[in-house]
Each structure stands twice: as structure tokens, then as C-alpha cells.
Image (cartoon, rainbow, N blue to C red; front, side):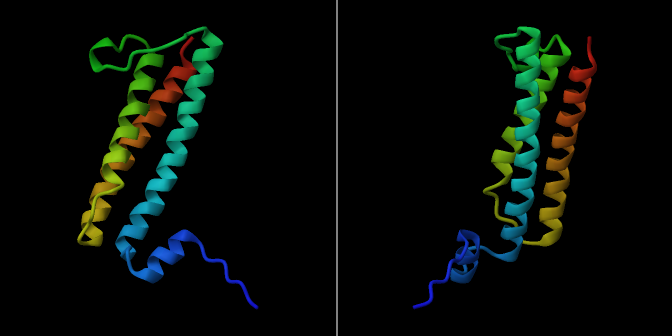
Length: 119
């Protein structure tokens, strides 16, 4: 008796629930989520080392580089959460949307770098 193991993504593709465009979207979103998760962990460690127990990330209350970096990481996470379930009809539509999302992730990365450099 042979047992075949198949990944959940492969199974979904075999069933036909995900189009190739959706699969690309999910893979890119997974990568962005990985990056944002690392940035969030860096910010958590930075706050811990500086003795900051909590930060507010509302746009009006951004006063320090740490608060600004936290704001952008949360903003990029929100953009990712909005983007992931979207259905795209063409590769160019997906590409445009991913470029916007990429810009938000890169802005978050830049702000995290500034927070790390701030004394």
C-alpha cells in the first residue's frame, strides 16, 4: 500500500480552487508576512531593551522613531491583511497591487532601521 502525502496548497490547486494568479499572490504575501514578522520581533526586542512597555501607534501620537516604526509595521500588516484575500483578474493588476504593498513593507523596514539607529 502506497501513501502519498500532498501539501495543502497542492491539494487546493488540484481541486482547482486557486488560480495561478491567486497562488502567486499567496506566495508573495507569505514572504511579506515573514518579513513583517521579523520586523515586529525586532521592534519588540528594541522596546524591551529600552524599557518601553507599550506604544501607541495611532497616527496622531507618533512622536519618537520607535513609535513611528511601530506605526509603519502595523500599517503594513493591515495592508497585507487587506491584500491577501483579494481576487485579481490579471497579472498586471496583481503586479500593481503588489508594488503598492511592497512600498509599504519597505517603508516599514526603513522606519525600523531608523528606530534601531536612534540613540
